[in-house]
Length: 576
Image (cartoon, rainbow, N blue to C red; front, side, top):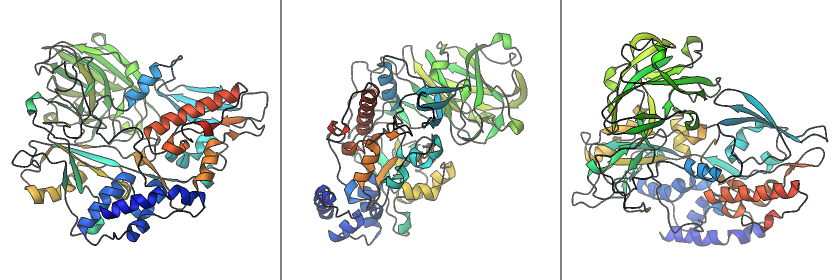
């Protein structure tokens, strides 16, 4: 603790050293100066928790310039368990716009140096992910708000490449990857009833294992009985609806149906047995298509009752979705856009069949859906409905006769009276002491070095290896997960290429922010590209609010330029 306080005090004068052009040290050097040098596994884990876990990289790769933490927006850190996720923030803000945004559309190229001075300087090439159509938009100004990782790895997105960015970029992208485990019992809880925040195992045998799921965070806090918990799972984060959340308006829940034996099929039919009134809002599917493959055309049909006897009868089915998805490989799920999906209402005590199909099957079924072969893998229940049955399809309404259980995820809301009687008079308040009581869930976080060592999506087999230290502590018979959810690594995501932008040790931020705050000008000296994103916000570059403020600042700057006014970005809160 004394060393940590010492580092914080030395970090406080970093701005002065910057102004004097004295450069900066890495945190490892400062820790050594403060008398802290790890000599064993326990020391390693303490340092990992304070530095690596926070900044995604070890102390020798973290600039002291990045070390001071900001508390401008909140008194502490909280886990967000809202099942709508961060996307809900963007959707809510989009609803306040005067003009509806163009969604489900990927920007593939930005041409921004038009030789003709009487034409708009930029041409933005896009592809609609729902119908595969391409559109080119002419623009007088463009504000890219993608992550630093995308700017670093996707230079081909801009023609010509951005000027000076690569040479002056001061950031290095790091990555987080999370693995969630649910168990039959919360075996890590103290026998006297005391809750534990963390379960820590020390890499005593091999110090190279530092941070390899050595910190497990307990999401099971408090004493709410498990039968009062609506436990659901998401393709990206596990989500739990607790009695402390309001029942109205209904929040979207997610039931995940993981793939277990990787069997492919152009289409899959299955049945849902509802015990409560529910509305299916959309689906996640798994396809063999990868990120570089063409978009996959998908159709979804539904009918009341079972599909038995109706596999070849299209007149009995209603189409509820038709669109395109970009494949992410066989280990990832992709969402069917909800605004194109007609909700499916199912009454309690009834059956509803759903048919998901690839519209144009590629050679060797390279873009086919994934499904489970064994019927035992169906019968997954959310507590309000059960997914049962499943048959593979060769072509549209052409049954193969082979069993195939749907894999992916079902997004739904409960609309009728729920037997669990969720209390509607309580509101959700974030808390560090009551998280998801009764969920029996632990999760661990890997950071950059371990993410690179694991490589790509974590398999169930690899995830089980991370539990070996817990088995030694609590016994192998108790450490048996009922579900494992490995969140895809942001490092490989083509729209992030990492999850945290770290200052490079010794980098010069003044040059970088001059590049970020000066618009990219074309050959006619017209300001065209206004780079946004949190990296453009000097005061709050590490935060979500920094991204918001940077977008506001760049919008004000672009509008001022296009209307002939002037706007000084150094008067904005990002640079104040």
